[in-house]
Image 1 (cartoon, rainbow, N blue to C red):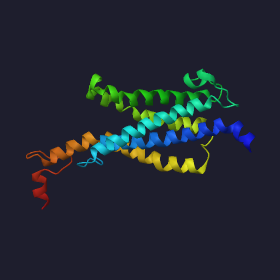
Image 2: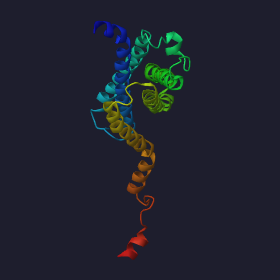
Image 3: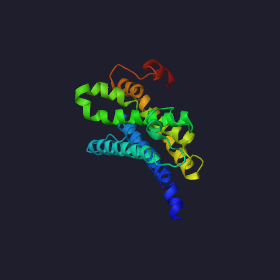
Image 4: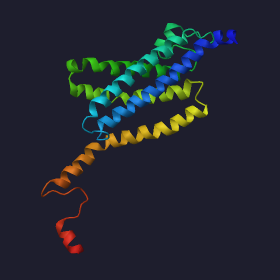
Length: 206
């Protein structure tokens, strides 16, 4: 048992850290989407949500780094530095592994951009931060295409529960400007929301 653990220990560590990274990325992206829309925008909660979003993102970056570094010790793959750093350089499922590497780089760039937010300006930072959904998409694609846990019931249930939730939050975020215009038009005197009946039509319906 000890010899088996020694032989497969690095591989198991890489698998575990990869799953942890996927979980943290999912949570971080979900929190970001909730903050970007009107969901959970309540007084006193914003700072807590921002801190949780930042901490899960940074923890996800650490898990991604551990996922790649521990793979160097895998006796079966022998990826080498190039294999974990350059998309397509590894022989094992190069497309799917490459997507994971690209997602890791994007996650690092967006996560660390928080610390240069003042330098690049909040407006540009917010635009760049919208790319976090691609980090999630790349991580899911990498997990399904290259991960050995893709067929396990636990991971399948995790994706079946979280992926629709992420898509719903993304849809809510994308339609927020349109819904905001409707609310504004409905509350302004003399203006009506798109699709709302005119006063003449309402009078005629009586």
